[in-house]
Amino acid sequence: MINFKKYTTMKYLKTFSVILFLIIVVSISVPSFRTGVLDSLSAIYGAILVNLTNQNRAAANIAELSVNPLLEKAAQMKADDMASKGYFAHNTPDGKTPWYWLGQAGYKYTYAGENLAVNFENSEDVENAWMNSPGHFLNIMNPKYTEIGIATSTGIYKGRQAVFVVQMFGSPLN
View 1 (cartoon, rainbow, N blue to C red):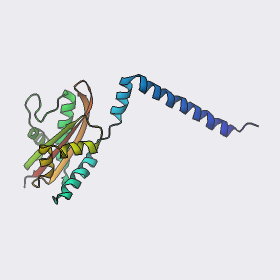
View 2: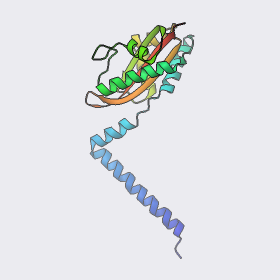
View 3: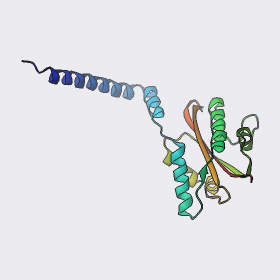
View 4: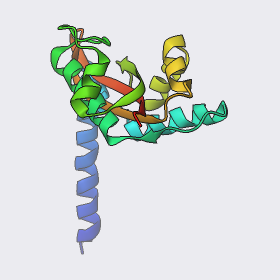
């Protein structure tokens, strides 16, 4: 007598193995497929970056930042603009400054700052790069900032798919 349960399980395992084998062969032999798969696996998350930023501030006895939805909105607008136009800079190609995005989001501030990143694959690498850059480090550690907003957007930069990251800092106008 045939054990149909065992036969069905073996059939699925063989099918899965063949599909997995084909994916591996294609990813090895077709570089553009491999790049696309790797790009889609990038893991940059705003919540993780907020936690890493606050961990670095806490280690230096600097108050943690609270997430502000208006800063997140400004960061998202800036990230989307860079992604859609394929540039990477604090000022847009048509001259808009980081403060433009804060105004568009309705965020009124006493102090504000911006960190940018592109072409990273995970949150930890982004934070490490910022901490090793004097200007970015100063923004992260600035005790005048009390709030933060982070956003990402995917677009084309220098001919390849990229994740754009924007970190906005602020102290609200009282």
